[in-house]
Amino acid sequence: MTVTITPDVELDAVFGGVDSHADTIHFAVITDRGGHVADAEFPTTAAGYAAAIAFLNAHGTVTAVGVEGTSSYGLGFTRAARQTGLTVIEVNRPDKAERRRIGKSDPIDAYAAARAALSGRASVVPKDDTVSGIRALHNAARSAVKARTATLNQIAHILITAPDNIRVKYTALRGKTQVDALSRLRPTGDGPRVALLTALKTLARRVQALTAEHDTLTAALDAAATEHNPGLRAAFGVGPDTAAQLLVTAGGNPDRLCTEASFAALCGVVPVPASSGRTNRHRLSRGGDRGANAALYRIALVRMSSDARTRDYVARQTAAGRTKKEIIRLLQARDRPGNLPLPHHAGHRPGRLRPPASTPGQEHHPDHRRRALRRLAGRDLLHRTRHTPRRRPRRRLPRLANRRMTSATRQLLDPET
Image (tube, rainbow, N blue to C red; front, side, top):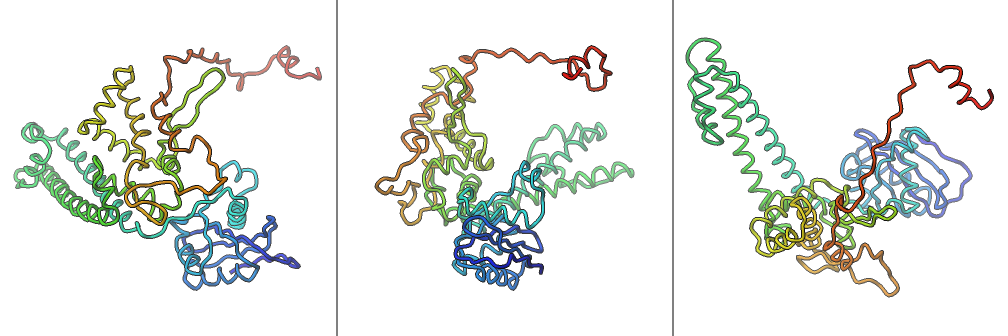
């Protein structure tokens, strides 16, 4: 353990910063004015976490601790810090511009995390562990689907180059019928034929095993999601996979999200201004959790085909001249997560995500109010290219990087000549 301490500093309130790794965590302490106090490195064990907390408490009254990777390498320290009553703030990793400017090291990253917690740039409370089981089941189910798809692609590629009698016989079959037929093969004949049929049989049985594994994981995921939030699972168009993805994105402590707009921004379905000059328009955010964005996209597709109210909405938007792609994006903004039941907690009604009652004098940005979002959802939030004048393409200049400058060009570029 290496410790660097600045002497002769009187401390009252201090902030901590943690740069987390697989085997070690680097801890930094700063004052409430941003002055560097001390930094140290500890192992990622229970004893190391206890020593890090004692190191922090020894320098003053702890206000908050900024931790990088609260859902990965920093999760162990986050649990230990919460058990001792410390306030933990989730900090994003430094951007590349800052790293190019000041460099990269464990102490630099730890001090940057502490400054982020001090300045308020990082203010998000980390997720708790109540949805960790759902997250694990969801990841396992997705990996089973990915492996199954890869195996089916291997079968298709082998059949393309197979002999004619094998290729014609089994390419005429589709889906489960083809897999079942290949799994019942009895390889006979010469050496290459036996090897080919053995490979097809092995891959087909692997597909069957992965399908059974995915069905088992989906059933367990459905039970866990229904137990955690039955209202979300019972919503129209929300299946086990989409419900699990929304629960994982929101976390088990949705009090981190004060309004519906905050969760909509987290899913990348909040309208954001994209105006410039005389062009005044909005578009959907391209940020946020792309997995949750894809889940809302699938919910919108299901409701477009099966829900009567959504089909009426699609008919009205089609009559207004919008394309299917534009209507789907409008549905993502209209049927944003605020209209889906989310985990309830103190201050929220069960089954609905509602913003907490604002205190007198408390104001919110108008773009983050529910009524403003509803008004924006009825407008064209997309790129309206039919109303935007086409820009002329830039004229590309010839490259002079590998050419020798003439004397006249040198005189033009050099003001001294």
